Image (cartoon, rainbow, N blue to C red):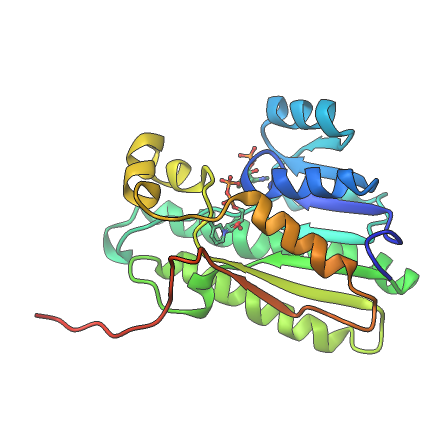
Length: 244
Ligand SMILES: NC(=O)c1ccc[n+]([C@@H]2O[C@H](COP(=O)([O-])OP(=O)(O)OC[C@H]3O[C@@H](n4cnc5c(N)ncnc54)[C@H](OP(=O)(O)O)[C@@H]3O)[C@@H](O)[C@H]2O)c1
């Protein structure tokens, strides 16, 4: 099975950043792409440019999500919608913890649960979950986000075990810093976020992630790229921290 054999994809977070780039990449390979996000204007623009099928839905609404994906025979699922918050746990707005877990963990699991039976029945499929380097490596000031992405990682490891023997492939996408709107949305100030997170620092582009997904899809079905850690060349993880 390669990308040319897969016909239909579901992509979340399709209205911007990585999800938008993934939709464009998959549509460029003649796949039918179901693009999920909340912002209708963005989805309609994407649909007009690529032929993707737009679905305006809040993916944290399990019932609405089930209605949208119920009839879709997905070969590829790119479970990518996510949100973040940078700050110390004891001073962050408490509702941000719930928003991060609802979107990054609960919605991701619910959508996977909805799509999996069809993939099992057809014995074909490739599931991508967007984790983060913060889920693998300690990153100060990101406790709920990092914990949510660690959950993504272990969830995927276990689903690979639970579907062993089928032709369903599981790939964890582990990006370093990517230039998207996520930081501005988290801070509520796009310009301040650009200065804090992107100015003067090398960042990946969403197309770098989309191309990596395209490569994982292009492999023959005996080969699974289990985890793709993709960093800007001028980013590294690790090190020690000491108080003064
Ligand atoms: N950018 C980075 O440096 C980076 C690094 C590591 C991992 N990641 C991960 O990459 C993934 C994509 O993030 P991105 O950087 O591309 O950010 P982004 O540009 O902010 O995209 C986030 C997407 O999620 C959608 N979304 C948010 N809440 C939603 C909801 N309740 N229901 C449906 N859709 C919702 C947004 O669309 P609407 O607002 O229109 O709904 C948007 O399309 C996330 O999981 C993120 O954690 C990003």
